Image (cartoon, rainbow, N blue to C red; front, side, top):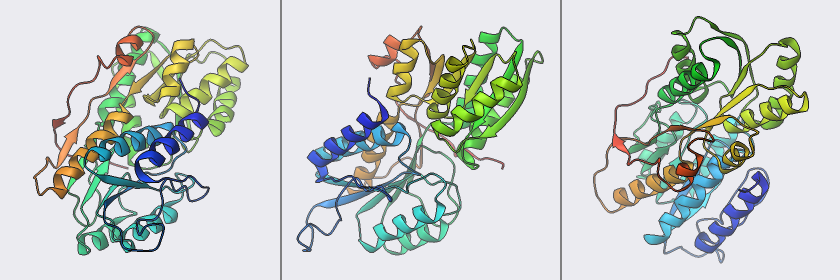
Length: 341
């Protein structure tokens, strides 16, 4: 298994081989400009890739698989991300820069469901097809050709059911949340909904760590001090869950720690016994499926407007099966996932 730094390096190497890629700091480009190194007109089709940030290995892994899938169709991936998942203006600027470069399609995961609305309309006017990945929540404003992602409310619900089984219906839980928005809200709402059936389980607090490991370490450490009898910490993404597990181990506290993503480093932590479980959302498959959908659009084919990818809780009991691909199931047509802030 790879560290975050190794994953980022791997993303650069794979994209360099398939898309003449470079990595540089804020904002975080993973590929060269669409117009070509010599300033001349490009001949290959370029697909832009814009996640909400690149601090999570989820987006690096999805970028790798999207680039590899694009190779089959002679589609070049150009990836860029804001330096942090709180940089709303940065994501807008990158999106509009892709439009100005006249890329052939944009794969993106918005920080929230409305910040890109004016930019989406500009892309529509420019005739650039758009596919959202890692979400089934409709974007506000403009037209999106397709959505590829897992149902995040159901994911949170599955994690809640799993937590209840671990705790045998009784215990104290703390939640480390991400950046406010639909990703964080849906996952957390699902978790709360599952625990309604278990009155013996009490959520003693929650705090936002902005999807970042370092902030989660501090927040989880404080929660462990405040609640000496804490039983379980949910990190609403894997990086925050790993942060919580680091905090617990540093205090020699035996608490369950659970994440959501299915990143390679989380699987490594599960194998080591440091992290209890994660809700695996198959980031590498999401990147692949999203690029497949974009290819179909460019070929003039129709696609499902909402394509739901699977999610499954992975712990030591089924980790080997996950690694061999045995837990993956084919995406299916679905309905949009609505949310309430």
